[in-house]
Image 1 (cartoon, rainbow, N blue to C red):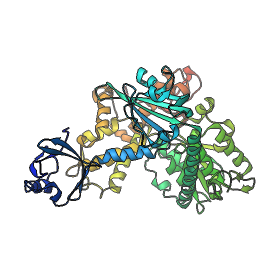
Image 2: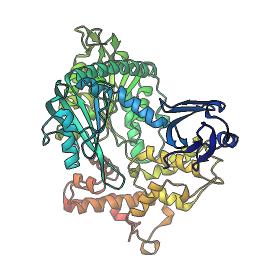
Image 3: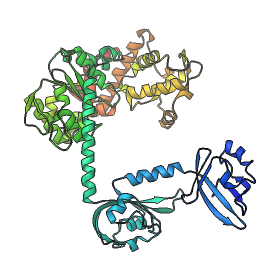
Image 4: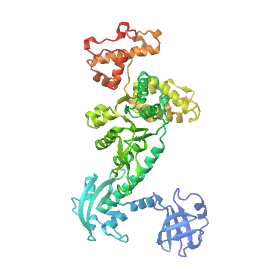
Length: 571
């Protein structure tokens, strides 16, 4: 990067002798204007406001930094474009409430923000850049946060320090330090943040006020957006697993009981929750939903229970979601992310059917149906101590398992068709062809993100498609890379199997599914849990299949499948 973008040579009379530009500097009007400046006194250049004391230049409305160098018998004006980013960053750093200090690799001061100067009693007028750290602070070199970060080239976190500055000010602080490196890996310097008790108090008060602002607006937003958008008709798929879950959900929706929905992230748990509410006797009342994993616990507590004026600084009278959802349904998404303490508070409310706003002693009766969701096996979470058993049995009068996409790949065609139809106006033109290779990659993927990931992939493919055709080049790079890294699955070819095609596709698929289940069950010593793990499905799903195909799960030597006597798929 050049030292200057533009140089103006002046003679002894301050008249322009020559104007030089570096490549790419001030393209356009200024370059055209510069050609007519030769012989013009610098003070008479039109729209040329030079302030050498401040080192600034405003020319034709453009801002520059400028300095003058004497070069007898004349002088040079060196002009560079204003560094807007640097000025903005400096202002951000100076407005920070924490004391921020920047040092070079030798431990020499480069910059202290206003908060640091204020804390240490250093005037804003005092020039401290270039001074050694040990000349400014009476600190132990072996303990100094800055020198430790520079010496070890590793971050230093939450280090307590008690020292004096050269102004004699006694300081007690908690410090964090980070070494900073150049692109080539060499040490550039270090950044240190310090906080004293006063700073921490102010920051806590500010954070608490911000929390209250968020709580008020989030609670109002969630309360206002109380109508369901989805019903059971919006759940796409005809697979046996999905339809069994839908039928169970419909049956339980009519009963006054709390429901736990288990399913992986992106599998459609909220669709089920909204469908249950819309199918229930509470359908005309509010449906409120909150993602328990998306907010810190203190915010969740305020959102659920509400606050009372005077409970803490800045608190107001605000109803919580449990109160706002009275007579309706509250959906607690990913409730397993709650701490055990928060779970205990929620359990008390559900048992007593009364809620107290934070800071209040008044109990408010509530009648709320709670639907919760869990993205992991709740039984395992209970064993790990992450879910209270008493809360689980209060929330899980019935468990509805939403199968992951990889366990219902037969629904892939319906899901793709539905998405393309719904978004037919979103692409450059309607899709009329999907290549076999595109379908193959969709079916080979294991879909860790489930339906949400599928729709994300399709959205990307639609935006990339050309001429109404979806092909492999329309997939995101990460998706194709994942496919290349997957081991190839070796399946039997048609010549290796004897197949009665007259049964039809559905019957053939079911027969093959039966045999896979039976073989896996025998392979695992007739242990249902191990079989479910081998097949990468939940134990409840395996039990569903066992009932569906009349698998007798008793003795290893007495395994019986009704189809064994008429096995036509494989020979």
